[in-house]
Image (cartoon, rainbow, N blue to C red; front, side, top):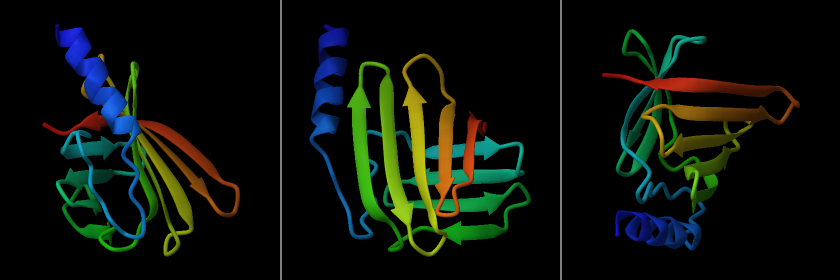
Length: 122
């Protein structure tokens, strides 16, 4: 029964597609994840995404600055994707079903590709 419910949840996420600055994480988890390579903390809240230093200083607030925001689900997990003109980047965050961490992929307009795991902050 749990598998059927999870499958229905993921299929419903496939139908969700938001854009023009709206951040609705749907069933994507809220919380904080650490990019240890850049000493940054990605914070996902109900209606916003923010990037902080590990010291707590705000680096960037995505509120009202995202385009092509989408939540997609599959049997392997849930992902959000969006772009931001102000940063010149596209973002993808994937939450697998087997652990609490995220996989982050950032592509810059200049062609630079960054792919790294993010550990959940406890």
